[in-house]
Length: 246
Image (cartoon, rainbow, N blue to C red; front, side, top):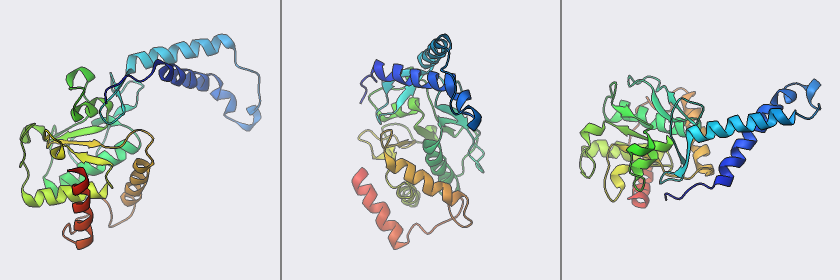
């Protein structure tokens, strides 16, 4: 899907942010829970600045998974450089919050269980004009995808992973309950690509992120803890998901 996000949506979002900025300070403490109305001129100025910020960052065009592509990273949008704890790949530009939690989990498990990663092996956000809009690679431009060792897995080729590695990849996807898709399952395979496969607002993403967040703070769970990917229950879950996504 590459349809435009409506201009009304963009303006409404900008106005909401601007009004929040204008009145936010009045809601900061109980003593100011009820106060004078904000100065209209200040509100108009805040709206104008928010609209300019939206114009600089947003494209109004969704990537194939429905998330809006952004023109810049690390500049008042949703995409920022995020660390991947314990993995020497440097920061990765991706959409923050739940998307970040899930994609970082994928990268970390790949590093610990599939193949050791090094600096430059993982890339995230890409400029919208550098990706093909009708293909899953467009999800890079919305900050909802990562490429892992792209030089080793050329687009259009299958079989880049050994069978045991692919078993682990399937287990990683099952960990994410279907909210992440592997580009190796696409009609035109792109085995280095992993991307969010649910639309914005889908509650499944938040549930998976919350599960991973809990794992990260529970000893003996989460990425970095080796699991038996051949355990029957895990294999069944991975095989069932592969059947749905392939």
